[in-house]
Image 1: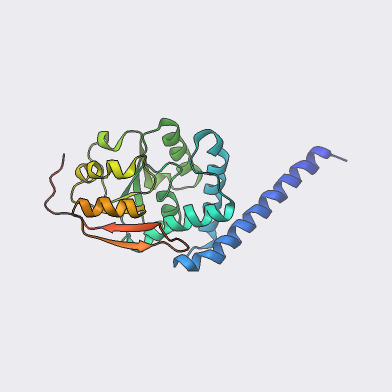
Image 2: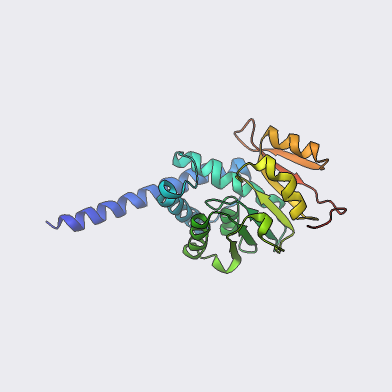
Length: 226
């Protein structure tokens, strides 16, 4: 008996089982978030999950979660953004880490393009490599800088989900990207900053959550760029 071949086939079967489980959980939960996901996109979302899972111990891209939690908290919550992205939109993702919310959105919507601004070199390298692996590199630009050092970046919409010291940096983020619409993920503390900044916004409570929101912040025509 070829034990090496048996082990190889065993690992392959296990990967197939995990992929099928992933797709089933995604199928079961996607209606709650009101998103359509084709089978080919579901396969790419699984590939993204595997890439994040493989690199997570070294790069700390996400906190420790189960597959089901990953699908809901990272993939489907990211896809909640799609409702507010017009056709052929070009958007900016600040501090995406493992690629959230931008990469799931780009996987599901081939009309979208995005610039990902990630200050940590190893995470920026991960994002560039992931875009290639996922077949979306032609629609992704990765900038390895602080957003305040990124200069002029194309895109009418700015999104942010997990930027370090998010609420502290938010006023600077508004100044650096004037006359843009912002789509920000956060909780009550983010709401307080938006009110203090005098911003007009709409908040959407994310499914299965009591404190996680998507804040859609209108642009301010009176802003002056840095």
